[in-house]
Image (cartoon, rainbow, N blue to C red; front, side, top):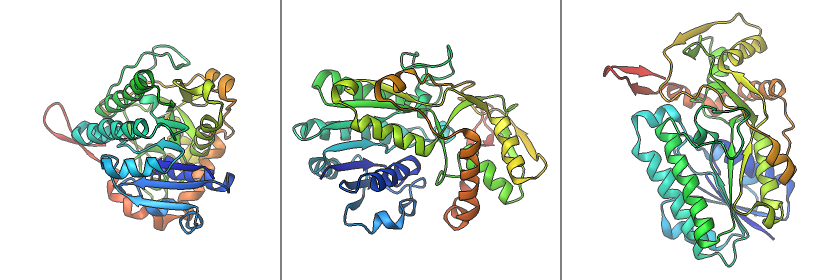
Length: 341
């Protein structure tokens, strides 16, 4: 029976991955380590999974060296999602991003190195934010790394740290750079759930700048499938490699706001606010490498995924209402005033 350790498994992408593996592989055991910060919630993991004898949950921090080492020592595969992930929050609270995203990754990588004799694979979940705004399109895995926020800089450090362990210590590491995920269970601080819940609450949808910033939006269940593919591909195909996970299609924030309003059948109620610092203007992923090497292709078109996401927020209000006050965060502006993002 294979055991998979998932750090950050009570977060948005992590919990969807845990559910995917639990349902697809009834012979696998799952260990989740999560600090349950504001963006993590044990309720993100379905009751069916939490009550199973194949599931084990540990409340703790990835910087707890002894705990991480113990959990890694009992695992065959380590999937490292745990991170602070919000761009705007990183603009006014830098340190926690580097402590969790860089030092926490070092903690996990050290444990993998210590127990390398039993670890089949170490999958580090990076982010497309490490690329910054597209220098060319579509963005492949060799695109320059130009982080434009403290969050992106921290994730770039973690990304390259893992690569250095692969090269220097020969650990069986793989790096995945997902583009912008959306779907059920995402925290309300992110733009799509913020738009959806604004419609539910009869509030205007706040759009940064002119809304022209465009992203490659990936349905979270597709990302879970991509990580699954990396875990089960022949190790000689993926060890030391970087894989983008995207759709190859970019959609602007303004267009998403309009689609959300249309899905609710309401007039467009948009409020334009100043552009966010560290904003990436364009992200669009190349699908070539993931398609050729691990045979991954996204299955969920954006329009379908958006409707499924809207329906989840409509039907699970009790799970997200407590997050309403956290949909906006304060950011100190260049003139010393506070802006809300």
